[in-house]
Amino acid sequence: MIRLNLMEAAERVSVLDVVTPVRVTDVSAQVKTSKKKTLLVAVAVLFVFGVFSCFISVFGVPQPLQGILPGPYLALIGAEDPSRSALTLSNGQQTSAGGSLEAQAAAAEEALKRRNALSVNQVVGEVKPQVLFNNKRDDYNSFLPMEKISFQRAAINQFFTFLTTATPDDVGFSDCVFQSPNYFYVRGVSVKPTSQRSFLERVKSVSSDFRTPPLPENAPATDITAFGLFNVNNVNKAAVTTFVNVKDVAEEIKAFKSIAAANKVTIGGFDKPSVEEFGVYKRFTYQVSTTADFPELQSMMAALDASPVRIGVTKAELKLVKRTLSTAMTLVMFVAP
Image (cartoon, rainbow, N blue to C red):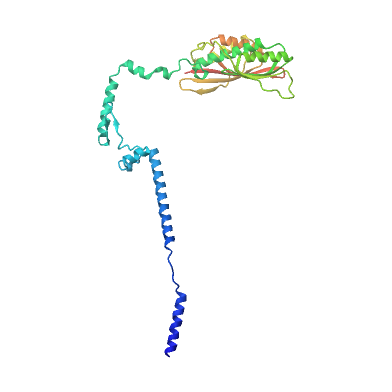
């Protein structure tokens, strides 16, 4: 009996040895894992600190944190704390945040005293009216409205006069465009290559930014295409100086038509102008047309330039259609109430 009990006890010991094995703890692995976690936490803290520093460096110290963050830290990152910023007085004295209200009041009072002590001439000298107004106004975009009208009339008159005198007899145009202030485009053909070269050289001599594109392979050797900026000279910007009164619009158009009729030019299209409001004045724009020949058009432009009529020509587009010259023009009038 005793032997059987001993055998059962031995079997239980053997079973327990198999079911419950001994676990050995790896101390070095746990130390490495702990170091990694600590390093990750430190990196995260540094990243958040860097982002926070960049934020207050750009946008300033938020109001809830004003007066809390250390001054050396703010100076290091270049941030400003309004509650700690020093006020510089006129005598060079600086006060800390504790006396900022008193310092502000003293500085404002001192500035007011200095301002009241200035003479009228000193105040006017500080304003510098020449900064507000470009008295030269050499550029077309800086011209006053009526100065633009004067320039437009002179520019198109000079360009049409040039074409009349500089174009050889054997050169004809199919397209001609002039747009204010001085943009032009001409396209045509000449009978002889010598006439073509002569005309292009003349146009180039009175132009800036002159261009003539290369001809296509199938184009004739006498083809003419040129565009650029026409040199407008000796313009009297005070040729017309006053706006057209709203009650005189019809009379001004009648005067323009009289100039056209005197040069055998009949113009239509004054019925429905486009009106733009500019506060103290309005701009009336008319899209008109005529089938007059070029010599008559040139004479009309010369007469308009010499007249007191207050109408400008911002664009003239001439096109040859079935041997008839068709001209579309954009006319402008500035009208005051």
